Image (cartoon, rainbow, N blue to C red; front, top):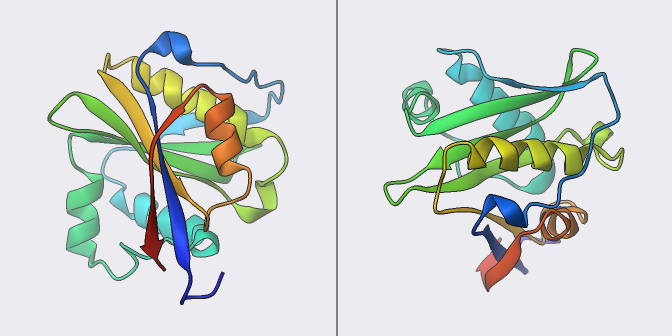
Length: 168
């Protein structure tokens, strides 16, 4: 997509844990682990590395202080997906003042897209989010994201509640 085109942004939500349609993970080398405390630089690195393929630009020029403040917020939890101890993706769960959790960022490294790990990673993200008893879990995706992003969200049980267009 070139920069003069608009990206369609789709907003999705899940209102209860019972709506989750999990994808089981049969790859025993695939694991999810929470980011170690104080390692805000991991958020920056993952955002920049994974996001460059999907035009994640909103935080690209942040300072170290901005990254530290964001990543060390008590309302943000970051999880790293690894396969055989190699980082293959990550996601961030951000709780707001209304007891909602946004999957703020969710992505796999390009070399691991299409290997069936996205559904298992999203299942883990949702299970972890629902452990906090939010009123809803939501996410947004755009046409700049991987072609499997929206189908994965829908397959896990998310429902679309809004779409809009944004200049890219």
